[in-house]
Image (tube, rainbow, N blue to C red):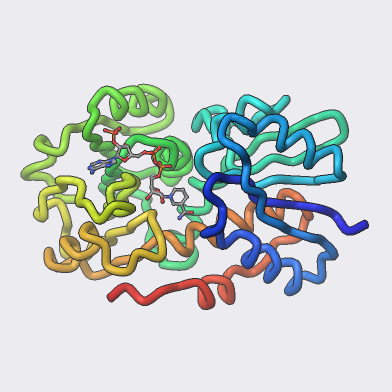
Length: 273
Ligand code: NDP
């Protein structure tokens, strides 16, 4: 029987992961099957256990099960511990290993694919949810001059800043206190774009040569990207590269072979217009 992998979420019909992993397997000549599982709400553990008993080797995890997957694991990487969430599991003998590749995937896209360095830069992250948590440590590992986390609920940004404070220059902010500051790289890690909303970032926060990065993907020119463009930002990007890169990290973790992501990004990218 071929090695079995899957992505689990609810809903799951929109997931690009089966397409991405089929392309990776084809390009690297790995003999595996990758499917999508609609996990019943409240039923993650039973679903993951059943998949493992059927010979499953690994799972990608999407909303709303990232916290369930974290708890389900018997061993967790530092990245997963820090994020408090898992986006990939590996079934390894008796062990269930948890990883979180969202942040490293984001960094790989920004640094390798888009050619932006975070070193010595002023970085602003909007949002303090799961994706922001996953990005915290990988961001600080890039030695930015400063990392400011702005969130609607300030306490959540403060909790994240406290976690990161031993690793680098990170602080929490309200949106209002951003006024008068400008940044080299701004990341929208809020879920506002999923409902066509705009986090209240002041247009002056965007420096002229800066990068505006929308973690959501497939939404074309979101209100966040539009305000960045109007503010004269030179580069805008959405999260399709992050999606491909976190998938490549999981593939490498499971199979020991690193797939190239360029073709996947080309196939999945939707023009930002
Ligand atoms: P969470 O639900 O964990 O966090 C949502 C965050 O958005 C919170 O900080 C929340 O603030 C904030 N927020 C929501 N609505 C608004 C609004 N209208 N104005 C201002 N802030 C708002 O979501 P995730 O962290 O899981 O996902 C965040 C984004 O990242 C989504 O767009 C998701 O699609 C994307 N993503 C992309 C990935 C990729 O591979 N490209 C992977 C994972 C996520 P508060 O705390 O105040 O409620």
